[in-house]
Image 1 (tube, rainbow, N blue to C red):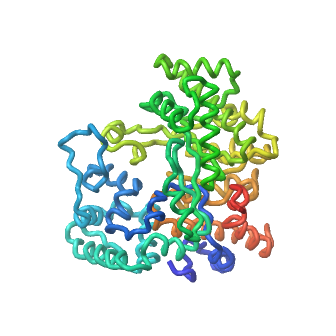
Image 2 (cartoon, rainbow, N blue to C red):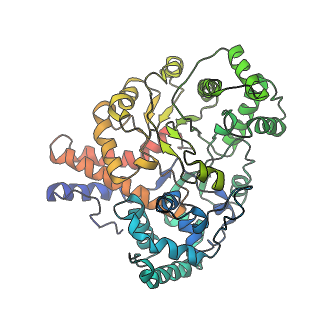
Image 3 (cartoon, one colour):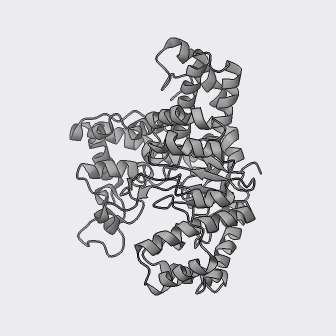
Length: 478
């Protein structure tokens, strides 16, 4: 979408003109991407993307999820299966066939943010025609778009690092688990390329007894760090060691994706008992939740020590589609939002650290009912708390608008942390940031038109929301 477009701006001509002016302040600012899931090997290798299907369709579970809802299994879209999955599940390997199947069902995406993002990727990133609905009759158009994108991908200007620079990305944060040796980040640091790509510490797989293989990962953590992880104290020491390694690789934040927002401030001995039950296989679901809840407080204490900003993403009922999980593994679109209690859940953690100036906690939600009732008052009442951007099911134009409308009255703008794209789809990064900037421009334009905010202050605010706030909140100034 060209920067002079009025896409997503208000219909009212007065507000539209103001939004256009405010957007003009934000549009040229570099992108700060403090939370995402792009594979750093893409940038470390800097090899051409293989084909349009594997770039745009296969890794995007917004896309594969929608098609699964209409009976098209991910295997038909090239999504790999996990070891031990049904041997009769053949994974499609022909990129053009994957693309044709996707294009034949383009109508399913009408009105969704996925369609908006994809159309913007086609036009803004690749300068190719839009897909047209029409089933198999639309294959000619599908092939035209596929061939045009393939042609672009063969050119040096469309290699990952060239796109990174064209997208005007100043900082890109990836997300890795503690056992990752961070080899791609080491290669990026060693080869002298100027793009700033940092990692994020995501320890979920080492604090969740219910995640299959937990004892083996704890043992691997000990082998990697040289700590004795058969004891709770050694386990904590090993986690601290890995946090140090992540910080050396550029990390400024940790990320925690727990089922709930429950926190517990247990004693060392109480936590050690739970840890032992996890190792010997006698822990039940109550024990697992208690240990996860305690570890959030333990990680907050570590954040006081080492300065990592703590992000919390609760409320996803992980792997709700059990068939999808068994066949294709985690993070393939099988999770469902659930209600979340932040006020009572976070009380133990905030009692200890909510007023400590060294601590920063960025909260996200999949439960919109908490925007005005819980999250905005918490961010407005504790100096350590910031509100993260709407994510996953809520990072749509409507979700972004509702967020601003419901949290600003209690939390203001400056207790929020700016936009995060939260994406694996590399080419959608600039599109998603542009949508957020347009929605913020529209929201601020209404405040200006209603004489609730002077234009010059609105201009400063949108610059802060787009660039300065995320850079500051996530400690990315260095």
